[in-house]
Image (cartoon, rainbow, N blue to C red; front, side, top):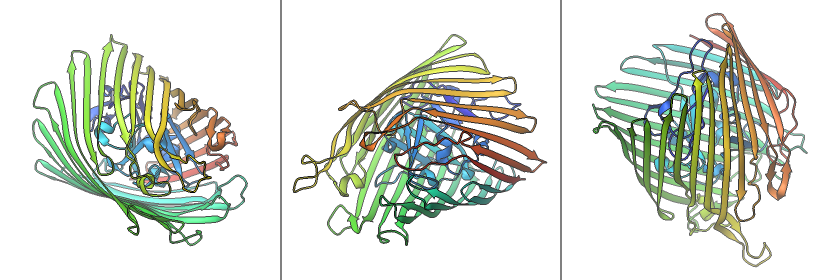
Length: 610
């Protein structure tokens, strides 16, 4: 089901809960790659890690990845309306721009403003999602303050695989997809495609016009082994159209395109593994025919090169060293005004070069991990980030871990050059501390407690000393400070055929200058998942209870409770029917002030696999 280990957060991996994948399997740990950039078993991880595996993805019947994430401990989702609308993810109270999103290890966050387009990623393309909480800038660079979400696309698990599915649900949801893949000893390849359409519902609560969403996604890959070298090329692409309403409730629409193309060559010797990754990422939004100004657009094009080396020459010492180069170009127009770094240029270029080093070693029952990175950024110069972690067993049932970390977020080109732009901006800097304790008296029962404290300095905020009344407009400044303190308590158990996973988040996300609660983040969130296999079939319950949140204008958003029911019915050897009753209580709630959310609805899918 999910792997979640509440333990120290601030560095690279935690004491993860073992996943519950099926009724007749033990709770075995996943193999993780995001926490330390090298494959490790979950019981070696030190910071908090969540793994959403393929079984949980299929059980959810979710329309996008954001819906999968919102039921995971420590992750809060805000959405400006229905499917396809702007979506934000907050990890442990940090800003949404402090969440780094990767697809197959490649950063897809846009270089302009805002977070990655989670609403455009279809779960059908995803094998698993690894989430590491706390700063990971020492390994991944900018944005990795709250945590890292690594979306790993599907590959082949057998010699030959064929699959197809159709889905339907409330708000005119309909979709279909197919996939084919093969994996041999030296060669593998696969391709999958899916299309989703929904009529949606009104964006605003005081509007009556349904706003729809279209998304067509393709994922293709090929892998070949050439002696000691393995080469893989992959391409993921999502494109479509999102209808929405502007602040005046007028109907608008925009076309989107998200692409990630990657080539990876890996060589493995006895004590040295080396991997070179070259990737290109495109994030493009263009206003459609209904828009106020159809010439408006925003575009990010990024080329990345990463060379990673895992060195195990010294027994007991694991070293990872690498170089990372990024060349990024952003461009855009908003209400006819270009996003630009020079008058008339209409684009902004940013370079980021970095070197990173990580060391992990064990002394008896104690495990240590230290990582550091120096990043040279064309916008502001150099910045150093690091992580330090320690963990140990306390007898046969208890374990403890602790971590410290420093992260950063580089100012986006919208911060630097759009309205209020300030080319002199410095990066936002975080400092985090984590302490985690786990008690596991039996393989099928586990309690975990994590305490965390994060301070973020030099947050970029718009400032106008004249309050919009002076002759000159204000500009963005590094004047904000935030502090997030909290605790996570998790319980995972297998009670006969029942599997239970519950997590409670208690946090204080506050503005250090004013003491106000940070926007769209609750102080209390409870999640629970219960699964009951019935032979080859399955029943499940999913629950999310969120406390009161604050929005712009000091508006208070009421707390809410969501309950979903899910069922799986095996129709013979190759056919599976899945159904989900979402928002069983028909809760009327808001994630963003004035915007609609989905009511009670039934969603179903029929899948064929061979």
